[in-house]
Image (cartoon, rainbow, N blue to C red; front, side, top):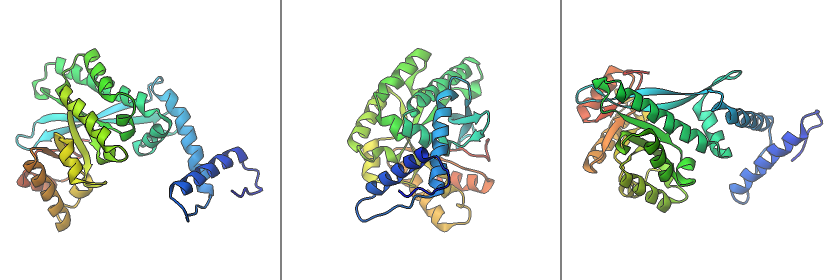
Length: 288
């Protein structure tokens, strides 16, 4: 690392250089990385977010928003997806795409993830107790990161929270991306089997955007496939997206799985999904 003589914090520069060296080594031999001012800014931002995240739960800065999922058979709300939001007193709204990776890197994803499951199930119990029949039975979908899923005894944590709140396991749907199979696929499949045996529902999120593997899909035995919004966005005019969505719906049906389309924003998209036999939909067209 070459440090410029500009009065910068050499401690921070050294940390950023270490990160650059680590990434270069991780990429294999005969590679190189440039150390730039942008790397220093990103590292300082990540360090600031990490320290702020440690206080976010206790200070009530995290909140959950719930996006409805409707059945395309009858347009009834049959589930909601819990979406975590962080409103920092100085930074304002911090995007999950920014703070979730930070939480995963520093291990805070474990307490944050447990808080999300507990808060979402508590809200679901409150809705069930309200006596509003349109919301019963309602399933709560919660996103689970690969780090959260594979660390500790995740099935035991889920079972403990369900027991403490007093909710049945089939009211909870855990959304897992295909990345859970990377690194340790056998352990991921074992954990999914334990959760299924407990009665918890499992869905594969963002299907088709990552390292899609039909062999993993066969072994996952998931309850539902989520069609990523990147395929839904242009289905009214892009023949490739139309073909991909039709293929996913047909494959899921043949495997005995349900499908839910994300990012539905227009009546044309809804009509296409209905005509092709998609089971569920969510997005701004239905509710933000």
